[in-house]
Length: 340
Image 1 (cartoon, rainbow, N blue to C red):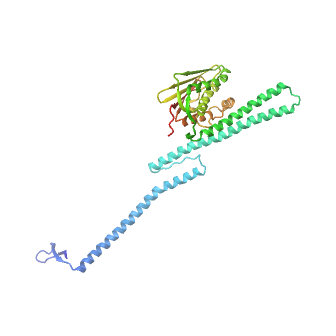
Image 2: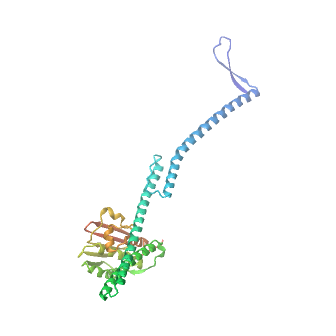
Image 3: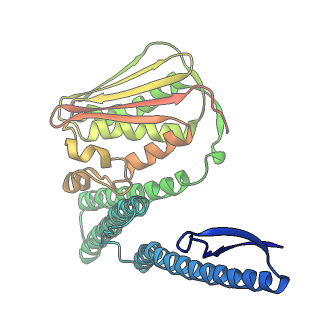
C-alpha cells in the first residue's frame, strides 16, 4: 500500500518540502481509516442532533397555532358562538381562522333567528288560544246572551282558530320542504292554468282592499313540476304581494318561457323591502317588520317555504325591491325536471 509523506532533506533543502511516495504497512492504514471513520461518525452524530433540534423547534412552531386552533374549535363545540378568533401565523392557518370566524358569525345569526322564531311562534300560538279562552269564558258567564252576541263571539273564535291553523300549516310545510328532492311528485302540469287558479283564489282578498290583480301569460307552458309544492310557492309570493300592498294598489303576475326554463314574475306597488333587509328575507323565521307581519298573520316562514320549493325544482329566485315603491320576485324553473 502507498502513502504520501513529507520529509526534510539536509542536502541544502532543509526548508523545502519534498514528497516521497512510500509504502505504508497494513496496520498503519487501518489505524488511519479508523481515525477518519471516528471523525466521520462524530460529525454525523452532531449533524443529526442539530437536525433533530431544528425539526423540533420548527414542528413546535407549526404545532402551536394548530393546537390553539383545536382549542378554539373546542370552544365552538361547547357553545361559545359569540367569540371571534385571531391568530398571527402562517397564511394558510389565518385563512382557516377567517373561515371559522365567518362560519361562527353565520351560526350565531341562525341561532339568534331560531331563538327569535321560538319566541315569536310561542307568542303566536299562545295568543289565539288565549283569545278563544277569553271569548268562551265570556259566553259562559252570560246565561241569557242574545244570539247576535253568540254569532259575533263565534266569528271571532273561528278567526283565531284559522290563525292558529295557518301557523301550524306553515310549520308542517317547512318540515316537508326540508326533505330530499327525491320526494317530489313530478308530473306534467299546465303552468298557465296553475297560475290562473291561484290568482282566482286570491282575488277576493285583493278586492277587499281594491287591489288590482293582473295576470299576463305570453305563451302556453307545460312543465315537469310538483304541482302541490310549486302551487304553494307561487301562492306565497302572490299572497305577500297583496298583504304588504297599499289600498287601491296593484299586483302583476307575468309568465314567460324559453327553450329551457319558464319564468314567473310577481310585482306589486306595495311597501317594499329596505335594501339592508333583502338578503335575509328568504331566511326561515325572518320577518322584516315584526309588528306588521303579526297584524297580517305572517309567521316569517312563507318566503323560506317558497325558496325551498323552488330550489327543489332546480330553480332560482331573485328579489328586486325599493322601499315604499314595491317589490318584484322573479322565479326561474327548468321546464324539464332532471333527477340527478
